[in-house]
Image (cartoon, rainbow, N blue to C red; front, side, top):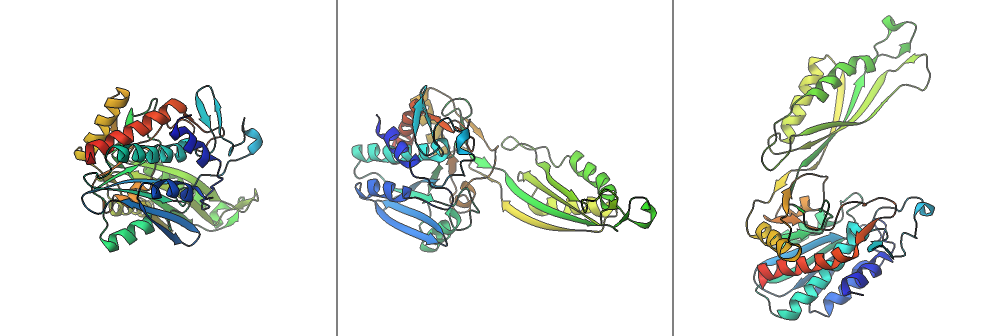
Length: 375
């Protein structure tokens, strides 16, 4: 059994459902201590974070990831127990195998291999782990980054181990992400009897044309690096539950995944202009979950793509699609952030899995990235 597979199995055995780390960081920390890393546990609320650094000078290359996992769902729906790592048909099954304990194991064994060849590399290596990525993401990476910035410990390069590959390891890397802007719209009408609509004002009827306008709106055309901004309605609620009552209010939850061509302030303004145009009596609570970011092709992107090519023979496509990740917190201060991990085929699902062979390949890719940056 390879060192990467063995460590991935040991991590999966720890039921680290957000925000419980369940000993994962201690396990990894022991490996890093043996390599000469300086370890610091940063606890905020119920969240455990680990910051580990090797070396004292030179550029800082950081691997980042999370030890927490989402709940398993009904365990009897799993073919094998979610926290009992099982290998079938060349796949390692277990909660967190792909998102992202397989990546964490690959990071650690890659660092071990690299430092075995370069005991004194041309710079520093950092590892940032949190147990709060799958949850609120308030007391995790965001808080650690704030602490590091206050100290002046700003990474030069960050590699996040999110499962970015589409069909085979390394066929896609994320060199940026779209922003996320959510809104909760409340439209006010007048409650009444369905038989007397002239005595009421139905907020569902009033809002429907405005929603149709927002759904049909072309917010921007995107760019070479980003797809067009998208608007999606996720929840609609109105009514008292009675079939003969016109509701007095209607609540709509929606989300923008946006690119730099449509800043959050512009999206807020354009949305509210549509609602005003349709004469609605409304209020909106806005939540900005993430700003878009982009790492242009340069030293880190080139090193990652070259490493993928050398290990797998594939040409990694750069992409900014998908959801948000902790990379958004790192990108606020680190100019070069890239996400690279295993195939995203089963994350958050029953019978989550990662390819055993690709685990070792991922470790080799991470090792080669370090070679290009600090070797």
